[in-house]
Length: 234
Image (cartoon, rainbow, N blue to C red; front, side, top):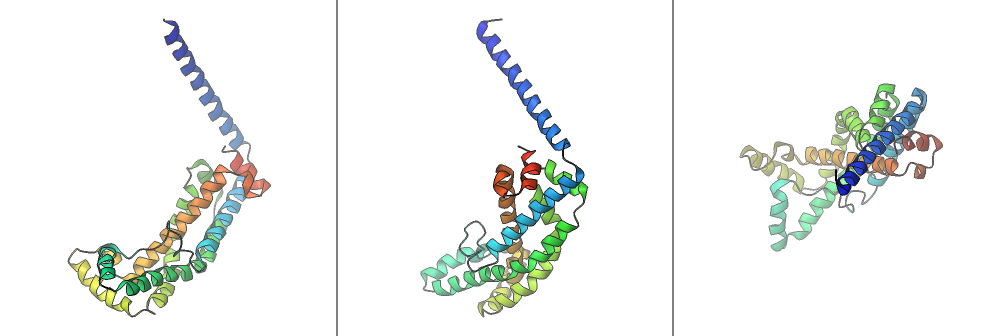
């Protein structure tokens, strides 16, 4: 074997050993956590993430001024809006877009109790699944446990807020016809239902950001328990 080939082989072998040692150390760290620590740590993380997401989104401009979650006009209406602006109807378009996002901002705070209830009902198995999952396991947990009940809470609030603008009734009528011709997705044909879905998407997206931040920097969480539990994943 040539010297260069031997060097590459040795380096690769050493890398494999290091990777194996790291994986073993990680498993040992996680195994050192008791069920109570794992459960309490994950519950604390979920509570922190849910409360932070609600606080960020459930306020004026929480959606409207955040490009990542701002709710656009649905489907082909977004394309039509560009044309409407050229014909001097830009203000009406802005009113509609603002109303959609204000509706989302009004609805989000009502979801806090649902999110926290899901946290309290979490099992040890749920906690271990979250710890062993990827960077979005918390988000997936919330989505699976709370999306349907959150939608039930959000829809009446969104409907109330969107009904304040006369354009909404006109939109629903036109969009229903467009959906019948296959020009618009069924979930986009009713404005309140569309906004409710987007509100949920924005909420879970923001919870996901909180989760990734915690996994990257457990120390920054300001909690010894969170640092111990999520530090074991580093």
